[in-house]
Length: 138
Image (cartoon, rainbow, N blue to C red):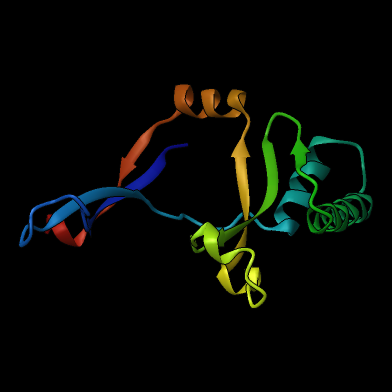
């Protein structure tokens, strides 16, 4: 299965002013849903779909709970998930101040996924590419 991409306009922060830049970006070809995953596992195993959905639902809840507890969730041979925050930088001299509120410097939270090295190697060695039409190549 090829990885689909297209050429899109983008900015180059170190580029010359007045120059238009282009880059390759992957294109989403669809969603692999919870339901589709359960069906595929059902066909690959002897478990019933109801059992698979129960296990996947429990796993999803345990992953959410672990992330909120600050734990890194390691999914064997896939990668690891961990909650992270984005923060503004600030001078260390403001830290001891009575009115210092560290929460005011946090811009947001997210979840970081770090793929396992074996997964990256698999993707890199087995990839095929397919370009889809782009407005820039009209």
